[in-house]
Length: 568
Image 1: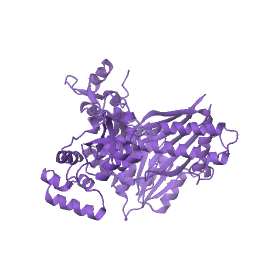
Image 2: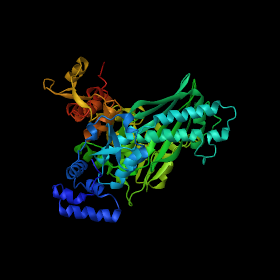
Image 3: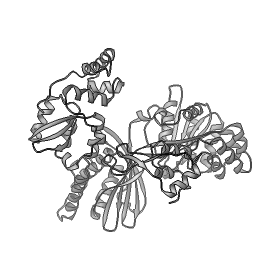
Image 4: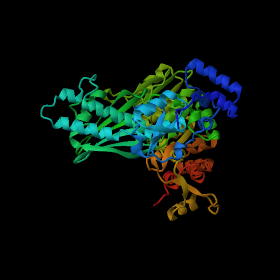
């Protein structure tokens, strides 16, 4: 096709009945005030969807619309257009034809972008229209930094092998040295981790090699491997950044540091541990964007959310959130605090460590080196006249008793506990040595949660359960005779061949009624568990996970991990 023509997006959308004139005027007014692109304003306001906008533009210009979600990219072809230009012109190279390249563009009427793409690629281009959000997701996936990381690791190895290497320059011991080999390698690793939404970076020395892996959606993914020689330089640099003791290699150390990637402020928690082949490092990435801490965005069932919300607005008592490591407990508690944080309320937290900074909330951190533990810190903050206290974790009897006493004396206390479900949490407190009457009087409710991976929408297909899965279904389905179709993901480029993309929370909430409080005060804890499970019937983690499988949102393999009865 030839050079594109300019179009008036708003008029096109009104003409094709995707929005009305009044909505267009509102969008134009916001565009004039903010300087944002009109299409982005229209989509964000919900006047028209991104797909409707893209299809309207394609129809007006008489060029094809392409759904990137269903398109299988050729990674080598994509790389022919540099990432900087792809992001700048909101475009991606899709296909090479004998006389031209096929380019996906968000705004094909951008004449300057068209001319620059022709100049860069030195060939004519054929344009198709794509959605902006899908384009940016595709760019993030396609321009992985694996090759660059491997190249920088090799460069660092060669510098280490050199007999004339300047150690200070190599390490970037001065934090301002951005072109030191180690600094460039780590920065690239951080950028790639943020780009693929990794929650953790693992640096793992083996006998003859160094492995770097990312945890994405709760599952480990191989990133790259390199020569074992570079591990000392990497870890030393990380220790410098986190303010740790670079001479101490025999004991575990914990620290943190911050950095910025593509205008995103990231807080990095780092943990080192000595192993047979050297120190291993795990880094937790915490993107400092507190806007996402909202209870309405967690995906709780409406009735459960209403009960939980009612409970956290009580003036006193304790509310527990339980689940294994990585189940989203911190996100839930921070979301609750964000809602409770008002000018009329004083909120203080006791954490180990502080993960996210919340404006308007006093956050304190445990420091075992100076014997400032949970009980001591909690006793101190209770003299600071708080209304609400967040206690990071119920670790021991003393912490639990101090927290429950605070709940009995007019404070709302939020905390976490490691149990498999909601019904066993009160029993766990009693097993820790907390008096039964304190649990019965102070505990308001328990929220148990898990995170389950969702099937990739780009490669979802029908699935026939195996014999072991059918046996599990016969045990857990209310009526096993009902015919249900299941789904799974076959794996594609959009989900890194895993068949999954994103996660969703599963929740069960046990409200401590008078009957349950009386049962908790009885000698036989089995009575309480039985009554609690009766109250949760039909609303358990298992029930919710089964519904995800029946609805085709998650696979049987994934949801069966929630249930301990799964056997291969």
